[in-house]
Length: 316
Image (cartoon, rainbow, N blue to C red):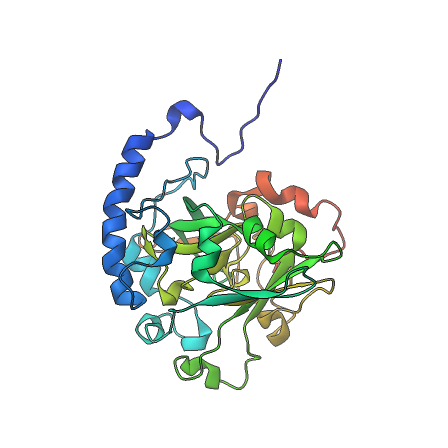
């Protein structure tokens, strides 16, 4: 007899919302997305939500965050994006980011180096919505319904060579629209990376929308990476280049302060940041402080990635 042990974020099929209800809800949000795109991206309908004629994207019921969704206003007005400044209120300045047209270059150890427009990428993947936790290294957290596709699909499109061990993500630089780039004490561009194995994990995600709307610039629009089990600085925003390499990359914050920010940066309440505790986190919206969970609550999905790395500094 086959015995299936469900993961913490999975639901039995009987508990899933009926597809008709999900799709009807998404149809309504799809109509709002057209209005949102006009405000954010300068186009009538963002390609991030244009896969179906009505913009409908189904929610994947397997991913259950175990907490309430953060109010949209809080998630979209309290942001870190240092290219626009070092305060949490950068969202007005971020509206200057030019997001249309947008393309992503694939470079390095790839069998097919090329540049792909975002529309071309989205035509070759299937969009879904996932409600995922997001935990900042600064000990605040939010829970967001993201629209996007598995990170493994982006790797597939990049066609890495067999010897590639790491994936590097680079954030856009638009000097005329990003005043933070004038801060010469930072090592621009913003670089982040992961192993090929991490990029292939089912939890890795590429976001192109949130709350049923195109991904706004302050949250990393029009395309960003999400590692829900890692501290948020690992999730590169506004990605313009993906590089495959056999050399471990040194990320943006690691270059700036290696003693505080490492390559792995997996969430762990038992390992404090040198300047504050990581034992609890503050939820945006409610302000409630709750206990931090190892791997941000996704350990049963990702812990096996790190079983043979006892000598590595796995947590920031």
